[in-house]
Length: 255
Image (tube, rainbow, N blue to C red):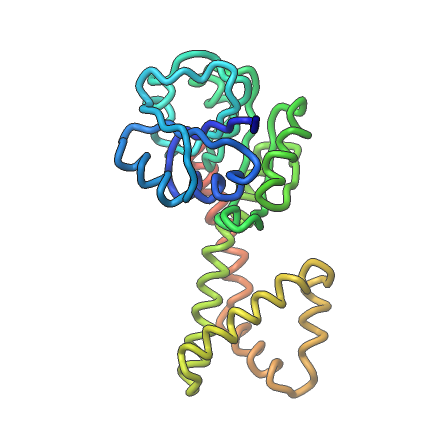
């Protein structure tokens, strides 16, 4: 019999993680709206155990908390029993705050990203070191993992890996738009962009970004011309600022 993983919450992140876990684990979900629970099950395309949140007993359960940070107090008040382990994917919500509201033997903060739904998340984790190996095994089911030494580091990593797909989506869309502007058909521009990202994703695993860039950019060539435009547009500075702003927002949420 497969181990059961209990989700509290049914938003996009919960669905992405559940999609990555459903082949190896039994999925259980608790929430406040039966229609949304049904929609979650439909989107997951597999049978799940569904429960209303009021009076839901988490005794001995492995729980993944996927609610909005602002709802921590309200949600915790509806639960009964003591969880075996609480995995939280709430941005900026500290272990100290989670421990104050939830009855659990241990807490691990995790920050997956939306690529969890295709088994390719970059998930950062920190918390109770006794669960380091278990956390790596669980979250390893949805992609790569990195255990960090502090909550400050996971807040920084959240700005990079957690929010990163949105930043890369902006870049992907903009590059495709640029090709369309120059006369490439939209469907072809999208296919070329998708192929670009597929290949780049593999290359960046083995080649340092600076070396990868230098390997493509020949003197006076097309890449150098385009790269110059990116520098003129302060793309590098904007990316650095994006990480800072997202990190500061994570710190703000922790207060």
